[in-house]
Image (cartoon, rainbow, N blue to C red; front, side):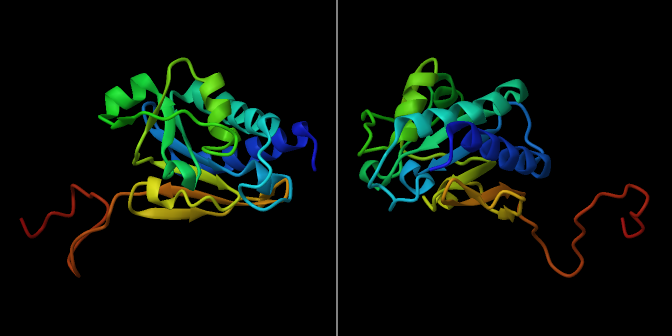
Length: 190
C-alpha cells in the first residue's frame, strides 16, 4: 500500500484538477465515493481502513472548506448508498435525513471518517451534487446532477483504486435554432 502522505497528495492533486474544471461556487455540493479496500489493492468492501478514510476525507475537506463547497460522503451498498453531510447542509437543501450510523463494514471507512471530522453529521438518503470523485468504482453517478461530464485528470489511481471525476452542466435544450450562449446584439428576429 502507498503511504498515507502519498494517498493525500494524489487525492488533492486529482481533486484540484477537477475543481478547476467544475467551477463550483460557495454552497455547491461535492460528493465523495470511496473504497478504502480498493485503495489498498483489495476487493471493494473487503478490507476497510479508517486511516485511509480519514486521510482522503480530510484531504478533500482542506480543498473544499476555503471555497465554501460542502462535502457529501457516500456509503456502500449496505446503507443503500446513503450519504453523510453536515446537518446544516441537509436542512438548507431539503434533504431527507435517515437514521443509520456507519461502521467500517456497513457504510465504510470514508463515512466513519466523515462522522469523526464533520461538526454535526447526519445521513441522508440521496443528494444532487454539482461534482464529485469516485475512488474505487463506488458508483457516485446517481448522486451527481444531470448532465454529468467526466473530467480527465493526471491522477488515474489513488493507491490501487481506479478514480473517476465528474462535474455537471445545465441541460442544453431546444432544437436547430437554439443558441447556447447569450449575445444581446444578435436579436435580429425579435
